[in-house]
Image (cartoon, rainbow, N blue to C red; front, side):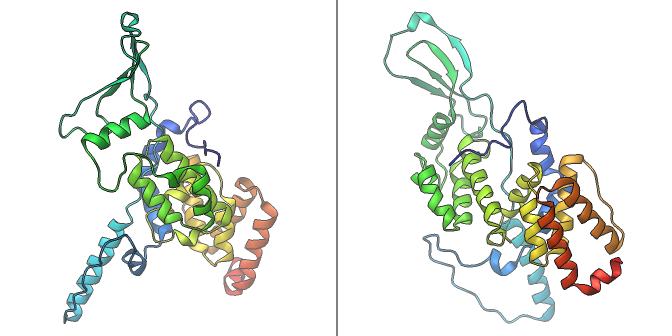
Length: 313
């Protein structure tokens, strides 16, 4: 399974340095949250994670108490679908710091040195490697992961990367539609700037997009980053087609606003349905590849919704 290099290219992607700022920008986050369609029932559904579920508690409540509880549950559901970030790859890994020819052949093994000061984040912790050939360099991804996990183990994270992330094992999981399981496990095992994280996550996004199985990730923390990935890399066709075929007109508008914000830096203000339909038509003509198929889908949508179509004439 090939890597997905779209967000990783150094010279060919001038927006790479701004990637984190774009993802965390409040207008972008608001659009991603709208597109996620948080459903309380799905957010708090039972999941088989090897633990016994909590015993349900039943209470008699007044209408005011129920309304207050519902508001609190919605807030907790929003927190539960907190989106994992999309950030550039870390670029300083393996950087050579010094070459000491006087110790060449002193030992046949590498020596790893690390700062184990409590409270230092795994990302900022200093980890360097002295090679048998005298080179002193910064640790690579796997070395940093092993050292951090040995000295400061994180729950759910394994010292050795699970075999499920090997390309040959990942493919059948993708074909089976186990997207949320893959993405949750990747978030637990890797740092978001790790090349393995990018490989696994972007391969999953690509498979979801090609199979148009967006509904599997709806109301989870992973749909927003997936749509950010598609908009950032200018791959709008499949999602726009999916929305038109499944009567998700608002989602088309929000996605176009997201796409325009990321690629052109523009805010879109619309007045009425005429502007919305014109926006979609113009977007299909200028930004999409399969224009014929998408125009036909938009035409079919207006036919099914004759009342809406009549207002645009």
